[in-house]
Amino acid sequence: MVAQLEDLSEIIAAHVVLVHDDASKPQDRFAAKVHLALVGADAVAECRAETLHAAIDLVTAKVAQQLRKRKTNVIDKTRSRAQRAVQRKRQG
Image (tube, rainbow, N blue to C red):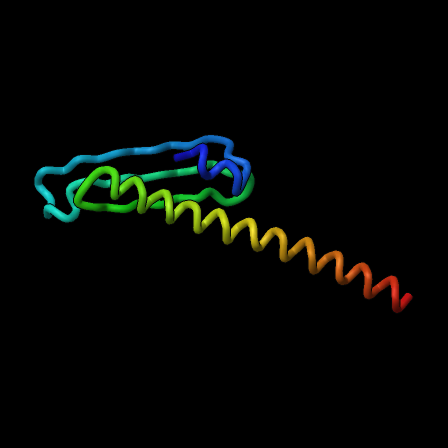
């Protein structure tokens, strides 16, 4: 799971917790919690599902979405800085 996410961001550390709870509803029996330590803000997600594999897939998708959003924001900031520099050069 972490190997899939490494392409999206520089991961410093990962903490994954898998929980099986017989007392909860059948559709919420398994839970997967992920905490990724990154440069800057951390990525945290938790999902519950009927099977362990489904919970892992859901939490992986959530964390991947967070990392894609983070990467897009970084790229947009870089582009906007570059565009401002070009505009200053044209004006100046």
